[in-house]
Amino acid sequence: MNRRINRSLWGNMIVIIVLTVVAIFMALPLVYSIMNAFKPLDELFLFPPRLFVRRPTLKNFSDLFYLMSNSFVPFSRYLFNSVFISFLSTLGHVIIASMAAYPLAKHRFPGSKFLFNLVIFSLMFSGYVTNIPRFIIMAKLGLLDTYFALILPYIGATLGLFLMKQFMEQIPDSYIESARIDGANEFRIWWHVVMPNVKPAWLTLILFTFRDTWNDTYTPALYLHNEAMKPFSLALTYIQQGGFVRAGAAAAAAVLMMLPSLIIFILTQSNVVETMKSAGIKE
Image (cartoon, rainbow, N blue to C red; front, top):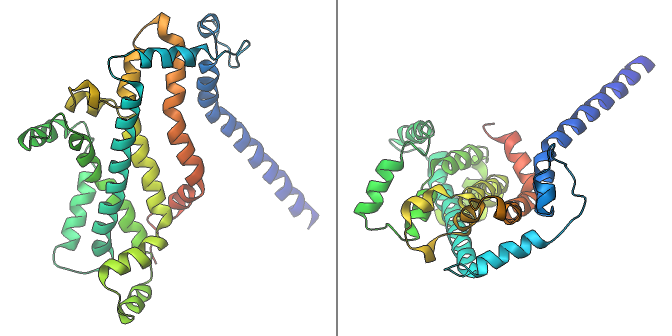
C-alpha cells in the first residue's frame, strides 16, 4: 500500500516538474517581448541577446507616442478604428453564429444536415484562398474603403457556428421543451436558456474573434485606402518598418498590441479551458 502511495507521489512530482518546465518555456517569448519594450537601443541589439533588461527605460513608449501623435492621422483615430472594428466584428460574429447554430443543433428540418456539412467543408479552406472572391464581392457591393469590408467577413465566419453547434447539442432537450411549455418563444429560448448554458463557447469565440480582428493587418491593407479609417495594428506596422532608429518604438508597439488580447484571455481562461475539454462531446 505504501509503495502505491509513494509511486503516486513521485509520479505527481514528475508531472508537476515537467509541466512547470513546459510552462516556463512557453512563457519565454511573452517575457522576452515585454522586456524588449523597456530596453534601451544598446541592449536591444546585444548579441547574444539578454532575456532580462539591465537598465529599464520608458523612452521606447515615449518615442512611440511621439511618432503616433505627429503622424498624419491622430493616434486616437487609429485606436478608435481598431476598437470599433473589433467590437462590432466580435459582437456580430457571436450573435449570428449562435443564432444560426441553434436551429441546426436543436431543430430537425429538411436540409439541416446538408447545411452543416457545408459549414464543415468551408473550414477546410484557408482565408487566403477566398481573398480574391471576397474582394470581388466587396467591390460589387460597393463596400471597399468602408468598415463593413472588414466587419462582414468576420461576422460570417463559419468556425464560430461549428463551435456553438457542438456545444448546443450537449444541452438536454428537456430544458427547451420545458421553456416551450412555459410559453417561451424561440428567441427567448435562445437567449434565456441556450446562451447561458453555452457560456464557455461564446466566451472562447469572443477571445478568438477579438484576437484575430485586433491583430489583423492584411485585410485592412487590402480593403482600406483612406488613412483615417485604418486600424491601430496597421499604423504600428509602419512604425515597425522604420529600421534601426525605430526599433525601440517597435518593441513598445508589439507589447501594446498584445495587451488587449492578453487581458481578455486572462478574464476568460477558465471558460476557454472548459471549451477545449468539452468541444465535440455529445450525450
